[in-house]
Image (cartoon, rainbow, N blue to C red):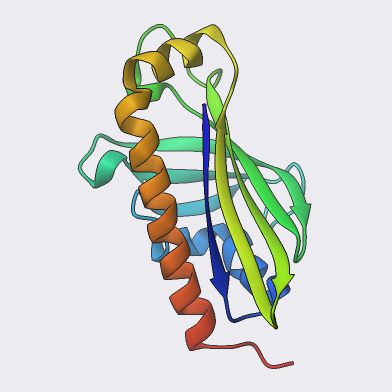
Length: 164
């Protein structure tokens, strides 16, 4: 119940991390997440900071908001957050109890960065059922979309390198 994608980017890990950790910019990179905004007083990335994301599943719908919380936040190294939602609106999963973790890992590589995006679904009965029922189609789509996200991130990071 997990997947990942990796890309090499000609920008420093800290600079790419800055792009990823600014969740208000997620719509520039993600094929599914339209927008995101910090909530509950959060104004930027830190462990425990909360935000919500507006998602258009499979770029078609349904469209819904998810509740997110930053769980790992180490500039230039890792940015991870949990997402709480009801998968596909299934009534078996009460709102905000089922989720997954999205993690971005940044490593120095040949003067640039090796960036990995990964997801891992919670290991709960509801998510195991969901993955058995829909994982065969949803998993490959998520991996494909991570690749698209990383390509958009690469294009942005390399188009406007940070001043050192």
